[in-house]
Length: 270
Ligand SMILES: C[S@@+](CC[C@H](N)C(=O)[O-])C[C@H]1O[C@@H](n2cnc3c(N)ncnc32)[C@H](O)[C@@H]1O
Image (cartoon, rainbow, N blue to C red; front, side, top):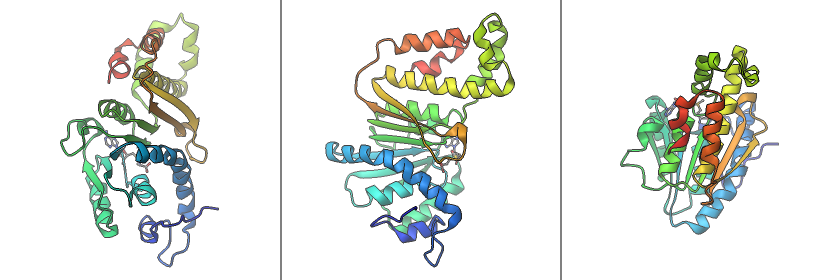
């Protein structure tokens, strides 16, 4: 059964419609809370390690939406810490404004919500020079790739991604299929639906190699309980400075095998 955890703000859970106004568990939201807790179980040990070893703890959540994840993480972990801050980056200003209202109401002072694209947030002065953790939960399409670039630029120690479907790689596969007809590998994505799914799959493989090429240890697992089967892949990358010597070569080989070398810059650089 989904529990309300010790010290958790009942007011926050009501505002997020997880609890009804009379304090009962809202059955429709129980599933959502269970999913966020499940994700939090992966994130909590990483946060503990950072809070013990790092003088600052800045977490940036990209494609924050209603900042459900950011609020729960803040409430469970950040609210009693010093030198710790949660930032939510989101393009929809109405969601930013709502989050700011809720943040003030709850007195969660070390939170900021910024109306920006992930890409543009890389050059925003209001974000710190280094960030210890980057999360992106179902950030649409290439926003996850921009979150990776952001994390590399900010030298994030941990990167936690649950990618959404990415359309860019599939569009290049589709466009360049004609050059691969003699290659039996084209069977993997000959049909339209396979192009889309294989494109998303290949994207995540390239993302993992990119992270490895920048010294990260990468684990990929399934976040059971998420409703969309294509969107439940959890990628956790931890900086270990063990630069994989041939990760770049493996990226190149894959791009060349599938005749999509135009995407070199997307997966090769930070
Ligand atoms: C599927 S929602 C996920 C929201 C939230 N992370 C969650 O899991 O509940 C994706 C969010 O990313 C935002 N978004 C899409 N592209 C973006 C971009 N390039 N930069 C920042 N936000 C973006 C959308 O407006 C939307 O709120």
